[in-house]
Image 1 (cartoon, rainbow, N blue to C red):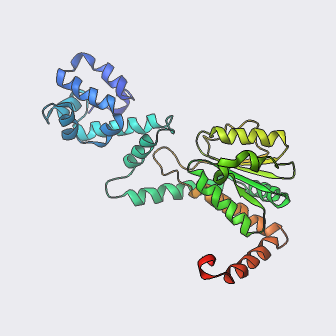
Image 2 (cartoon, helix red, strand yellow; image 1 turned 45 degrees about the vertical axis):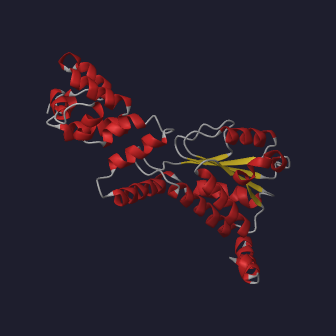
Image 3 (spheres, helix red, strand yellow; image 1 turned 90 degrees about the vertical axis):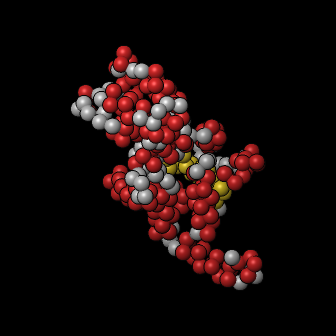
Length: 295
């Protein structure tokens, strides 16, 4: 194969560079690959040839014509091309899933996920300060009422945070579970309250709208986001932005959930025992409920 640095970086450039040498079969194969690059990066040469309606050996001949030793090496190039292009396409769930599969060797999906989660968590250690955690917990401790909002995947974490805060004795509301009556819930928001936003990738419009309401009422606003979800205007009073992993990595809720757990634990450390007393009270109350209600 030609040295990698001599090859065009992307498939479109590679096609243009070799246009004069391509046959009709090559054109049909490339059309299949270009029309569905995600599927093309996952299939072998025989599968791509079948979809293009050409001889199975045609994919191998195309790969060699383009400067690769065979189709497996061309497929590796297609996969790298996919991962590079997905960097700007986080809103495409199919592309994100395909990039993760590309990163994982066959039969090694679990290890790949574990490795990406561990790497992302290690990154948190060097990018999030104890002072950032304390700024969140201090604001929560002083709040009359806490509004928590996350959409899409973040809605799951929103519900968990609100639940844990309620059990710790704080008046918290999961706005994601109140979408049908947001005006009624938000009408009482004041400058004594806290709004905790969770936003990953592109902020949902409702997140921006609620943030605007909080700004009008001088409600202290916290935001926990990944590095691509930072475009919140007006800017929150306190924000923790952290990577959930790179392109092709799992980018799950493990990182933001870990940070949320740290905030709630720190809150228990500074609120004079209020959280611990509330948890004991809740435990006793639940133990006295009928079995059907206590579980």
